[in-house]
Image (cartoon, rainbow, N blue to C red; front, top):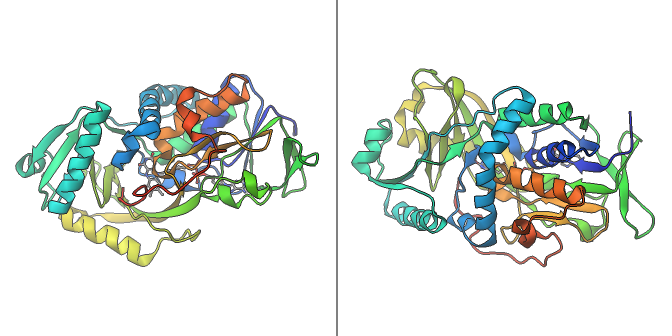
Amino acid sequence: MPDSFDLLVVGAGVIGLSVAWRAAQRGLAVCVVERERPGVGASTAAAGLLGPSEPHAWTGPLGAATRAALEAWEDFALELERAADGPVGLRRDGALHIATDTAEVAALEETAAALEAAGIAFERLDAAACARIEPGLRTVAAGLLVPGEAQVDTGRLLARLARACTRAGVQIDIGVEPLSAIRGGDGPVEGVRLSDGTERLAPLTVLACGAWSSQATWLPEAARPPVRPLAGEYVLLAGDPERPPVSRAVRGRLGSIVPRAGGVAWLGTTVRDAGYARLPAVAAVRDVLERWTRLLPALEGLSISSVGCGLRPASPDGLPFVGPSAIEGLAVATGHGRNGIIHAPLAGEAIAALAAGDGLPAVVGPFDPRRAVADAPGTTTADR
Ligand SMILES: Cc1cc2nc3c(=O)[nH]c(=O)nc-3n(C[C@H](O)[C@H](O)[C@H](O)COP(=O)(O)OP(=O)(O)OC[C@H]3O[C@@H](n4cnc5c(N)ncnc54)[C@H](O)[C@@H]3O)c2cc1C
């Protein structure tokens, strides 16, 4: 097994695998190190909505990157499907954003203003129009139909990314983690020593450990990005493929229901600051089920196929960390919070370009991991 590469990626979530795949396509020899298995973190837990849930994600530097990432998504998906020989479950059904009371109508207006400013087409619907397009919904006061909003099946996406990486020659080492960085004193990172006693060497190592990136004790503290985990519970429902409970993603201030192929529906979610606990909390799952069965009584007739909890990598200022770190030979790609699926094509391309010596695209400039970060208010409040 080779131990010397052009690029070493630690973490096989949607971000790490996108970086690895894009870098391998540029002809680089790439190794990915994953301590559990690809996709096991936040990435397969995600709803896969390709439109942000928080209006602020459409504005400022994050908004510019969100738009760039969304523009790249369709080509990214088509290329990935060809490379991995299988679907990623991209659906272009649009999404219905709903409000059920006056407080939510105000939140819906914020979403409308953000969409308008971002130049995203949408249609305002009254209660009767919402009931016409999604007859199963109860107590909806108003809605916004966003016809261009797509979604992806995150389970399929991660499986295809792993396969595309392998086919492109990426070595994915599973069940191992770095114990220490290989550096001469305060010199550049030249690789890592792994928990199985082996070493991986590369001129550039990328920290892509999602919510665990701040816990990378194999790196000096100054090089660890200040991400924290934000837990999100979800429930996968199994139903009749011929009679899905909704015909498109339905999104509200209190979460989403997302129909997938084969009668599956993703139901979520919560946004909880609860440390690194990864088992779904009973009260959180109960809340998700209660709120959605109230809105969509037909869900009571479906079965639960699984319940899970993902840890989103949240940054203090709401911006991701993408680019070189304070230490030579180490780059960072994390902190995407609630938008990591959306941003994966952009982060992948950016770090692959950096590794190939082409420099970072300007749009990720504000995500410099070396910036001073301060808490931004309102970056983690609304539920997806
Ligand atoms: C309920 C929920 C719904 C969401 N919905 C959406 C959505 O609709 N749209 C959207 O854009 N985003 C959504 N997100 C956010 C999105 O899932 C994340 O932003 C994204 O998955 C982060 O990807 P990542 O690769 O950085 O992290 P992860 O997917 O968490 O991957 C990190 C990987 O690193 C590995 N790792 C950690 N430490 C080590 C180590 N020391 N050594 C080796 N490997 C290590 C982990 O095992 C893991 O596989 C949602 C998240 C949740 C939880």
